Length: 558
Image 1 (cartoon, one colour):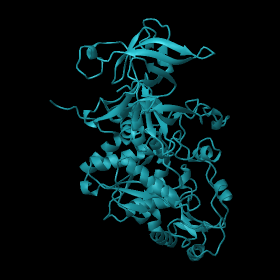
Image 2 (tube, rainbow, N blue to C red):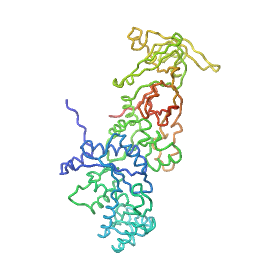
Image 3 (cartoon, rainbow, N blue to C red):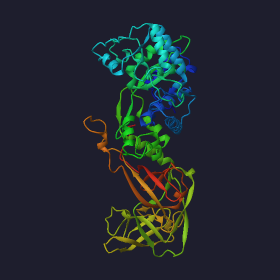
């Protein structure tokens, strides 16, 4: 039977055309080039999956290159977190590289451009330079230093490098076209003075290349065949190509920049500046708070790499930006967790259930499947005794025929255990039920093969043995914002839309197997939701984060 072939996205079509026009398959090379000035977020997952996905599709190497040209904002901490995130997503890079590896080459090329009359040292402050650029419909004003003698610019540029001038007093600008309708072409700054230590080069450099200058030339030095970036860099492409023209050797592969749409997800923000505010103003506990859209936050919340990759696959590669419903992401998470999560029993709002005809000192360890969706996941033993906890909402003294849980005189099956019947209740002075008394059918034990064990009842409840109950803290996470696009309105502060119920902390009782689970291990608390063990857990206090609720009405279109 023929398997329907998936149509190529527009980037794959470009690559296929390039291969048909003479580019050799062994010349294909991609890269993921983050700036190490923060933690990666959900938007970056698209760029990661696109670049590394193409590497897998074409069996081509993919570099992880850190565009570390701004020592004011970059730190080794961010480098380490980015490497961890990419690895967690399931990808392995060919080479770990840094734009700072090329600082000497970039400087030498800049000197050559000055010699060719294509760059000059400007002594105006940045505010004046910005003002002189005007706007796309009005020609810019040339700097009074634009035509200064080449030797003068060479001398000043070297002295800038040697640290002779203060920050903001000089910059090196490319000499392109101050009348261009593309503002990026109006004599862009190539170097600025920054007397800040760099996380890799220390205090060696007193000048640093601007992103546009370093980025494309780094692609060229690494012989990246296709430089893929988000749509915001589309109007930077002419400058990318102009810079490339200055150094291009026709014996080398000429890198090609192409842009894809950024990914925006409802109820999330991806501006690093705004994410920093969330952390700085204590709206969250840190960059890896499970409510944050960072990859580290999603990992801590219990999302799986497979779910994130599947989400990106479903979103696809588009040329124009759109807003993706967060429910699609949550659907992908549920879909994967249903396959891999270990099922365990936890009672969130307990009421005591006493089985009066069960022997007083007896306990059983009942065998139950870890995951009915995966029979290779094995089984575990769950303790059962006379006194149990069940969910308070699973019992009513009186209920109609549509209530399939426990009611007085009614029967339910306890998961992996026996059929019980509620006989009577005990209440406190306020009329609240404190204990439910029940009887059990000792021949109805699940899996025993008796006629009684095969008897059908309409309800099945989860439970925890009171004697063996493990107290745990449960963090019930919800969406961080109350509106789909919290930063859409310029008149309001996005922090005004923080959801006050985005985190509810509760106490619960769990079966003792939860002592053994690992941090970030995918779990399903039966009939409650998907959870994972948090890194805050200690031997004395176990903490679990809700990943996503158990069910949702959302269904993807494909």
